[in-house]
Image 1: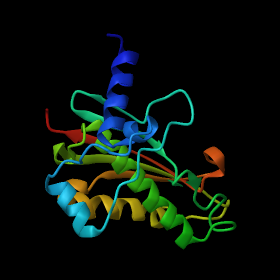
Image 2: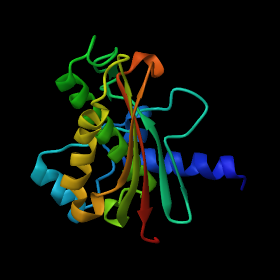
Image 3: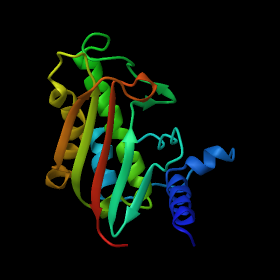
Image 4: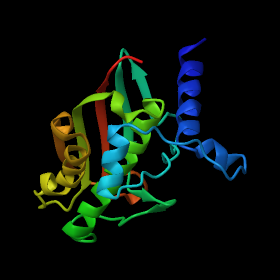
Length: 190
């Protein structure tokens, strides 16, 4: 099996574990989520993960190599709609950008669940978070924005959610998104 075929198989398997496949074929029932401690933590926090947003170009939402999950950059898509497009803070407030970063974090978790074949208990650590904020030239509070995603990971995974990080300002992001975040996680073997 080629690397591309293996990635496609993993992506489809992940989509099925999230119930995405059931909705794509018009079936009303989805596969049940894992009943592990992280799923219980999400329920306690009142968090329901969205379906993994579909990639916008020729790439996959995640790939796993040697028990490391690499999650593609996630923009703040919520139910198919981009949250708060524009630059921070001239077009998007800090509060709106933080909400967008939180949504990116939820989207990262959804993709991660696919990478784990539905079992988030396999996550042993978030290794690195890379956050980009579309910023006005004089804006320097990018870490404040990306903290919303960092805080979410620590809430969900505890100490294992603490990570190294980049928080970078840039002039523009895909689809005029105000935030884009990618992450790397170490996993326990299946």
